[in-house]
Image (tube, rainbow, N blue to C red; front, side):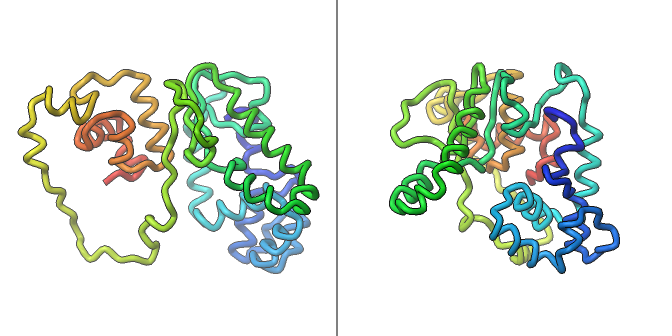
Amino acid sequence: MEGNINSYTYADEGASLYDVLNLYNSKHFLIKDKLIKAMADMSELVDYIEKTEDVQLAIMVKIIKEYGNKIPEIIKAIKEKHVDDKENAEMIFSTVHRCKGMEYDTIQLVNDFITEEKLEKLKLDKKGLEANATKINEEINMLYVAVTRTKNNLYIPETLMPKAFPVSSQIRVLKVANEDDKKPENSVNTNSKVVRKENTKEKAYSVEVLRNKHKDAYKPWSSEQDKQLEYLCCDGLEIKELANHFGRTTGAIRSRITKLGLEVLYDYK
């Protein structure tokens, strides 16, 4: 974690992720931050965030809503994996502010920067554009800083790519899952066990025929590809998307995920 690991659970104003979690659980007596303690409940905090546009508090609320009381366990697991010496780290996590002036071999951006689509919409609202010009410029600069931290490869969500941008071997565009395609949280799987059927036709293919369809089928995995696979698994890409990205079969992707121990870590079943 670039910078102090504990600072990632605090907003600049001093409110901590635990303060918001305690508000979420209606445990006001455990809240230390005065601002959070003054809130009656989460809905009041959300109203405050909407009026003040406090981005850091908004992120905290989003985390709390998604992970709830699992957060202490998650933070503990992160701290157990954390190393103090950056040279020994397999992956470095950073905010844009903390990585200013830094350079890395490979960068993967999360999908929370301003997009070209949003800018196009803002252009239609001239009054809003003028009123928020400074903030919009800051957001564009943030994306610029993030993109320019890499020395070699950049993994970037498709929503952040400009239209008709030239193809580059060093820029890997990541597909962003459509919210409508996701399985509803309250949906029920009535099958206690799912049996995956083998594709017997694909097994009958020769290596040459299979490579025509999947260009890297049966080729050895490099350490760089293994790292890429872990990054993309962490980002939540589906098996088919991973197969398309690496030019391999879905079976090969599943096999590699199992071999690297990513199956349980990133919930690939």
